[in-house]
Image (tube, rainbow, N blue to C red; front, side, top):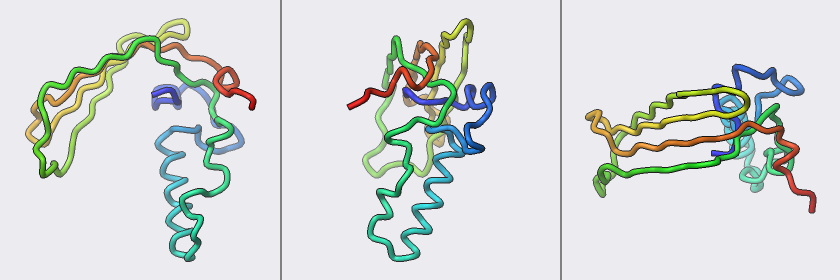
Length: 130
């Protein structure tokens, strides 16, 4: 979870007119480029250049201070058609964020609950030079 979240996407403008690394928009954009590469018959479609693995394109990233997840019930072995995920930001103040994530099955039974406390930092603090 140490990447930009949708709530951060609303607070910071994009860099180079591109969506931030880890955002839903960036994920969809990368998936579209992969699909195009597959359709062209390229064998390197999984490892396209500029996949954001070496440079984070975001104004801020979050670093987990605490993260807990409680599984309430198992999913059936045959799987489920869909799951419903609900994120709730309980508190955002002075660079710290508290979030709760609820996961429900298709009958809206609670499957799991997670709590995260994170601090927002510039991405340059996360990248280690090799």
